[in-house]
Image 1 (tube, helix red, strand yellow):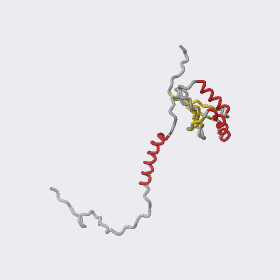
Image 2: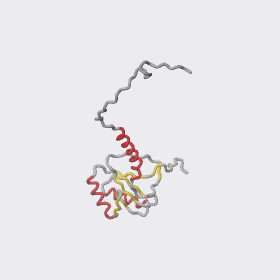
Image 3: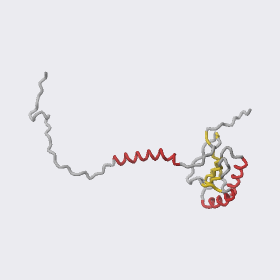
Image 4: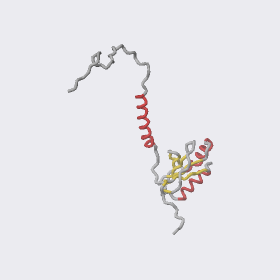
Length: 158
């Protein structure tokens, strides 16, 4: 159909093939696979980290209050379960040894902030007794932990 035109060097368009010389080994490290692996590990860690938290199953009361700002030091947490047992951080503690342990902890800590988590089924009297023990133990800044999204107090009453 159409006639093709060949160049003088055999149709290569002026480019000649280069002879393959022995290539020297690269002295540089290719970091792209390393970065890829690290990003995958980062994603796995970000997904798995929330699953590693261990806690006591309690039903916190719901409220419309906002969250407190975070602190530099890990907060001290007291938990009152539905059956009335006390836990300091993640360790079960006897009511009789609560105040001496709190005093020892307060002497070592810079911050006197403590979070009190109580199951919604725990009587108000028990919560107040533990708050009194926290006060006697040297903790004056007590934050009550609740779940967000609860009902708001109606101003109109009725």
